[in-house]
Amino acid sequence: MGNWVEILNEINQYRQDHITDPQEASRCFDRVRQKYLLQLHQKTNRNIIAYYSGWLSKPPVFGLEITHEDKNGFMMAIHRLDRNLGLDLILHTPGGQISATESLVNYLRKMFKDNIRAIVPQIAMSAGTMIACSCREIFMAKHSNLGPIDPQARGVAAYGVIEEFKRACKEVKADPSKTSMWQQIIGKYHPTFLNECENAKNRSNLFVTNQLKSVMFKDDPKANKKAKHIVKSLTDYRKNKGHDRPIHAEECEKMGLKISRIESEPEFQELVLTVHHCYMHALMNTNAFKLIENQNGICFSKQMTMPPMGGIAMMQMPVQLPGAQSD
Image 1 (tube, rainbow, N blue to C red):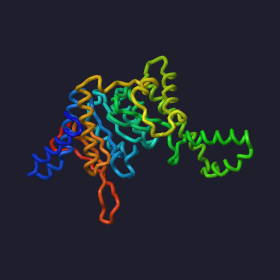
Image 2 (cartoon, rainbow, N blue to C red):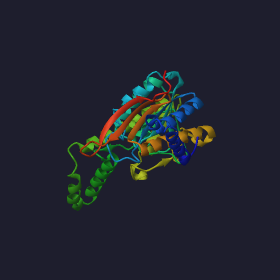
Image 3 (cartoon, helix red, strand yellow):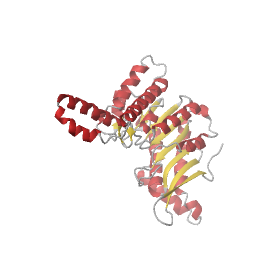
Image 4 (tube, rainbow, N blue to C red):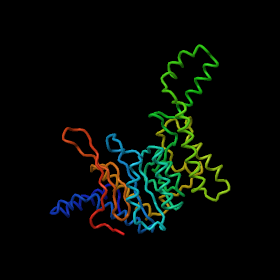
């Protein structure tokens, strides 16, 4: 186990130790990452699936966010796992499609019921927060954060559009001379756009509310009240003032989420952060921009390649690392 620099040194040392075998040397990121992912599994005696996006270090490309395609990676990672061990889901994601998130959570619940814990070593925003709220508890560190779950509609905040429309109605009613100004703004909305925003808002709220009630607050007589309060906090557009606002552990606890501190158990903390460093090094120093991987060496990797005419292409590489465990 080690810090950021120590893990990078270990990766480079593995490459150097296998310099006579270029193919094995090229697996240095994978080998070191898998070593610590397996150690984390041995510590917890629970299944581990790491879900990592490289949005912090890669250029914008489709697939960095949560998409329906991700379910293929999860199906591959879950195959042959002992589901009685439950699942620890390590999340590092900017969020993504609501429909893909709903579908993925539905699948995970069918596989592991409510025996799923979320681990957020650094960031799980937007739909990533929605996934975390679908787990029985969320492990966070001092530097971890979730984010608002107010949905986006056509690239803009649905809550923002709704608030703006309400403001327009209020101001025009109070001062009809403002009608022309607001007509220019509201007139830019696409047909049915307001309904689209309302539907996205209601769909997101209902999904997270139901997940909190049925998993995190299962059998709690105040489950409905707690869930609604949390959803209200996570969608408070006026307070959050932006979809990218970080919501740290203390605030998550205050709103009522079941937060466990990664720092409370030193060995667990060391392993979680070591695994996190391994993934960040891989995403920063290889062509991979998304990794979905379990403790047995089963890895679904999406990578960028440079086609002959320039630009960025994508390829999927579902692989089992040679020498990794297999059931």
